[in-house]
Image 1: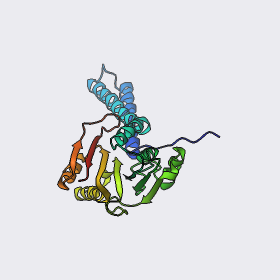
Image 2 (image 1 turned 120 degrees about the horizontal axis):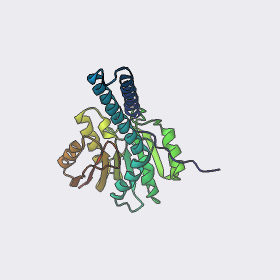
Image 3 (image 1 turned 180 degrees about the vertical axis):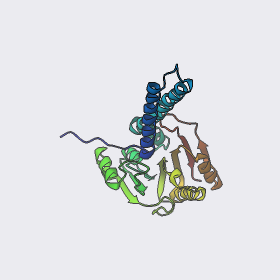
Image 4 (image 1 turned 90 degrees about the vertical axis):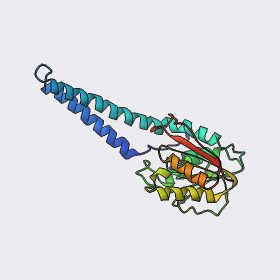
Length: 244
């Protein structure tokens, strides 16, 4: 029997759906205007039809970029993010907001003598089909199920002792906390559970300046914010640092 392949879902499925629906509606509206309002009789009708075509194409193109990011771009980007940790293979690594296990399983593949831990609240609004069962199924598909452990937990109250992790990662998760103080609390929690000298690499498409500010306020060393990376859409930036 052929082994199953991992499926890491579609990020922000509601946004993709709405962009697609709006794009289709605008294209149809443009077609209707072209049919019922010939250019010779109404220049305004032609202008509106062109606006409908262009806007509809832009909406559909954006939806297509988001699907490509979910199915291809983020798989390539995860390897770059994990490379930045410089793992030796025996560490304990935390994935904050692990979702269906994209980073969690990618990290576990690099840990023949270590373990990857993932926490999430399993919300389908952030990722399609997000559930503990889907995460574990992907771990089995990547042959790392013996090296991963997942828990249901809020990133603002991590269920791990202080200084228990060697490294931490996160992807498109922390921005889902609606308030700035909550996001800062999540960063402080990640810092708490890391050992001295522990490394953090996280990627997000917004609020990254806040993450940098919080880490520097904690006295972290070598805190860096990358340029925008186009392997994912919306374009993301990577925040990295080392706990003193």
